[in-house]
Structure formats: structure tokens, C-alpha cells
Length: 223
Image (cartoon, one colour):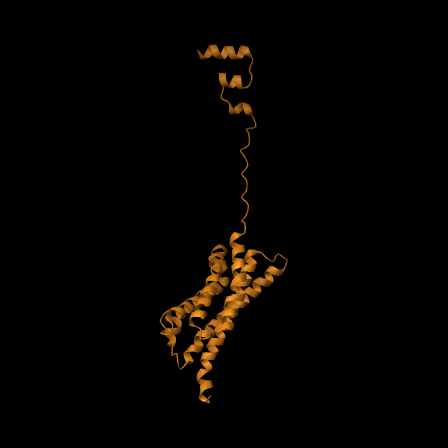
């Protein structure tokens, strides 16, 4: 290996390493998020620690994703240019898989930074957006296996696909977990005065067991 080769490959190596780290951080963030939403851990105090860890992992993952794309600008072989790392499917090298990776990066930024806007957009909307973080992981896996230079190696496939089993399990728990039980509606209360629910007249008198003389008088009046 000549002295020029390491310097020529340094940017590619940085991008490759940061991409692998970014996928690992996103995988860990998704696992923690599914653990919280599926309520597997119910110990007091654990929830807050997981939330903080989940937040920090998402932020560090955004930094790794940014480095993964920016390092390619110095790659003398790929020459992506600013358009190639920011516009999906614009790069000539495996455009489908690199484009999906760029989309995953944008979604990661959207979902990760939405945590700081949840009060403005509403907690309900924020939760719906945040649940789509699983899509970022899925697109990242497709991007890595489709565009990664080490996609055929056994170690990378194991690194990428091994977390799919616990992720699928926790996702199934979250989807299949029973919701809140429906509140049974109380039947309407009976009137306090049963006599007020019956109309006056012959029917009302019969319903209340009026004497025969009264019923007879009401019958003559109705003729």
C-alpha cells in the first residue's frame, strides 16, 4: 500500500464508520422506545431514565448521520457533491438505496427534533409522529444492506439483522396490548316519583291501583 492510499480513503472510512455507528444508535433508540411503549419494564424510576437515554441516543445518532453524509464530500472516488448527499435519488451510485438513506436521515431529524416541539404541536400529534421512528430504522437497514460496501460480509449482516427479532417482538407487544377498558354506561335512573311518569286519567289511576269507585267515575267521565 502506497503512502497516498490511506489519505485517499480516509473520508470514505470516516463515512463508513459513522454510518455503522448511526445505525447502531438508531437501533438502540428504537429498542428503548418500544420498551417504554410496550411497558415491559414497570419499575418505578426506570421510565424517566429511559426517556433521557432515548433522547440522548437520538441526538447523537443525528450527529453520526450528519457526519456520514458530510464525510462523503471529501471522497475522491464517489464525488457526490452537495446535491448527491441532500437530494434523494440524485446520486449516481446505487441511487435507490442511497436515496432511501437520505430520506431516513431527514425523517430521523424530523422525529428526533420534534421532541423539543411537542408542547407546540401537541403531545398527541407528537406521539403519532414519534411512533414512525421505526420507519427510520427500517430504511436505515435497507440503505446499509443495499448501498454499504460491506453488505455481503457476515459481521455486518449480523450487526444489522440481529436486532430485528427483539424489535419485531416489542412492536407486536405494543400493537397487541389491550387498550383501556371501556367504561360501562349506567342505566338511566328511575324517576323519583313514579306517579309523575304516568299520565293522568284512567290509565294512571289503574296503574296506581286506584279504588274501584274512582275508576268507575273516571270511566263515566270519559264517555
